[in-house]
Length: 428
Ligand SMILES: Cc1ncc(COP(=O)(O)O)c(C=O)c1O
Image (cartoon, rainbow, N blue to C red; front, side, top):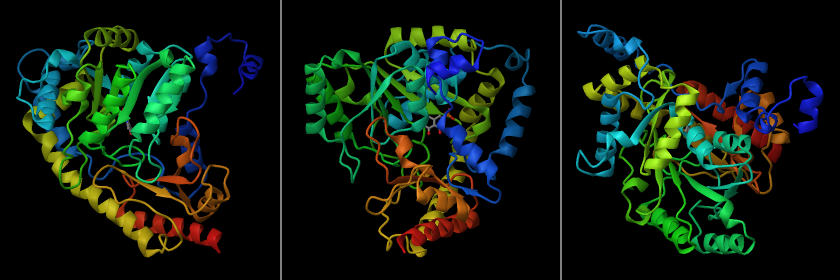
């Protein structure tokens, strides 16, 4: 919305930041879902409701509340987060990255209201309006909203359009051009979603990550790197092999912030996430801002997640839900295949984890909110996320993100049929 219009509509004089804010894309998706009765939504990135850990949660709350001593969990906690939880997070990082149990320092962790809050805090303390953050093509569209709210320009890292793999030569060229144009000083950070990414479900291998680091380093840009690992634990059969940037040699000199979450692997509604920061001063600034936001994530929720991690309930829950997401992915994938979508020229890769299928439409077919395809899908009763929302710049118009987290297998099959019918009716 243009700044002048905001001023004309309100007697309130907003800050530059306040004026810059626009309705989040997610709000439009939710409105569409609510306005259309009977719609099957493959848009929202919600988790599987049926398998949320109700019994385990109740048991944990019982244990926590029966502990000896004062009910500290119902009191304010610390700004940085419960020390027991941060210790459990540090141990988990060591386990995933193959380090010794004490390889990670709990004092470098901050517990946040979902990893989303950590993303906002980390970007807020780094960036001024007019700065640039490097992002993947495609990337997490809610983070693009965060950047736009800050007046920060997302700039895409060149990648192979088919595989999504980093194109190191094109990236190096882009950085040289930015240097020549005097833009490289505005580059404040790199944002990377490295495990079963949202939306493309990609997990770059170590060599690709190292290549990224070396192109940046050769361009003299040892900038802060944010690695978003929201789906790292949601693999179906085997854990992704690549270590996080926290443990990779190539990133040794970079200030690093690793983001994890307990929402998707455990109880989404508790909204507990975390950051682990290699750079003391960056973490300190994040904590100052967190103090101004809320001076600490909900203590009871943290106590529950801590107990879940320490008691093993967290891991047991993950073992329960991995096959559920695997089955759901298969239900949607098979539904699309059996409805003949591939024969219509649509293509996609079957993921090994996460919650999304990332489909490319045939030819030049557009899939945006205002496209004929989107309208047809709504008529048929199915909703998706238009791929064009997931690009920081030069959006691709013919991709679609389908999420299979929340619908039942039966509904996923039905949604797949509706989607394919829409595709067929336009192909005819
Ligand atoms: C890539 C990615 N990062 C971060 C988040 C934020 O998750 P949460 O705040 O629940 O931890 C999400 C949520 O969908 C996501 O997809």
